[in-house]
Image 1 (cartoon, rainbow, N blue to C red):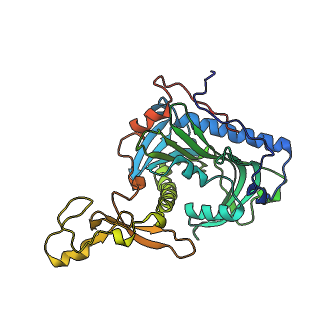
Image 2 (cartoon, one colour):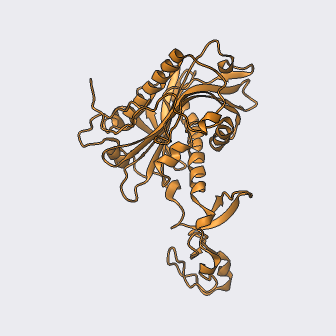
Image 3 (cartoon, helix red, strand yellow):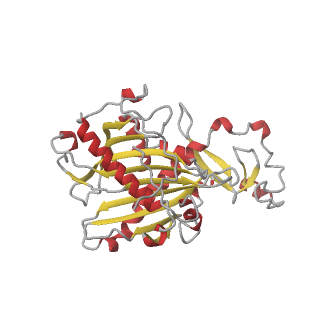
Length: 376
């Protein structure tokens, strides 16, 4: 059935368009144009499937079923996938970080930057490499890219082999006519016989993933949050993958938490902190400037007063949070931030669906019509 596109997808960039930074990316394998075309088609199909399954109100009940809510993450099971070999689910959270900033974390980069970014997401990364760049970002479309990525992971000693994966990845940000913004980083496992860099090393087991990655969306309304969904489609290899799902899900939910925490950390810029001369004297303050609670006259309570480094207000213990901030050229520092200044990125969805709130923004109109994008 044909479906009209309701998104303004930008024009495909020329295959030879490269920025100066892109030219520095080392490519470990050389592919023929025919192979590149097949890989682009593969990841384009995966992108279409992900967007179709996430953007439409009709898919909420027909495809996704809520499994649990744990540690601020909502988990949903893909009811259309669940054989003896496969399972697919998504982990959902929200943040104040713009869609573009989330997707930028996954845009093609050099190997050193890729490894650094992978370490943000995973604490057991052994190796990460860009094997080939299929589409380079451009000045007009800085988040649009496609590439082949190899990643290796250290596994617990109880497991015989370490794990690795070789996937084809696509990223982009799309601005919709209704004012909303959609971003994605989607990947699919690939098999390239005859290329040594794509073969499974000794002592490793290859993880197979399908229609996986990140879907990021914001309605564009004033004060609207950014929804981040981490989709995981894996070859489970167990007799009853759905029974093992509750054990597997939180491990991937922790990855989503790490990504959001990292992006939130980057939002705190020491250059924007209030100068000390503008700080409220917390010793003279009579009440918390965040929640208006009176401090009381007992002197010992002075140790429970803090100053927010962002606004300088005097705040109580309940309203203060300790945040880690990146300082260029120095070690990271820990600072006190009030609830008002702290990004709400760690406030998780409270609704039973991802939601009425998310679902209403998944469709571009009230008819629930489909949205397709041909990004590559």
